[in-house]
Length: 100
Image 1 (cartoon, rainbow, N blue to C red):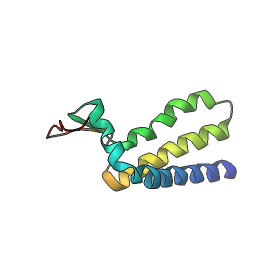
Image 2 (image 1 turned 90 degrees about the horizontal axis):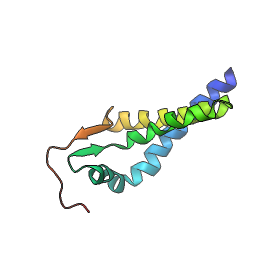
Image 3 (image 1 turned 135 degrees about the vertical axis):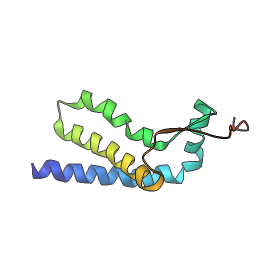
Image 4 (image 1 turned 180 degrees about the horizontal axis):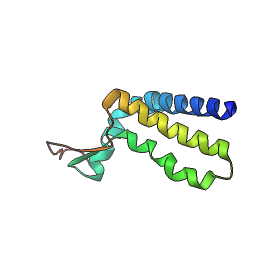
């Protein structure tokens, strides 16, 4: 029980730091990823935090791995919520056409 709580906390902190350091440093490149999908919608990097929730059901045989993967995703979502708010996709008011 205590082991699971510690694993959860460490994985959430790991996801937070990953999102803050890796994704934050590459924000300009990742920021335009949303515009490549649709020039009128911005896909935020908090969407990467949802990916572990789709992977987790395939890891249910190992509960420690499942907790780690889900905690990592939660950490990414928390980091994005702290810095930019709880948003995954939003509509862009001004269409950006100069992005290839």
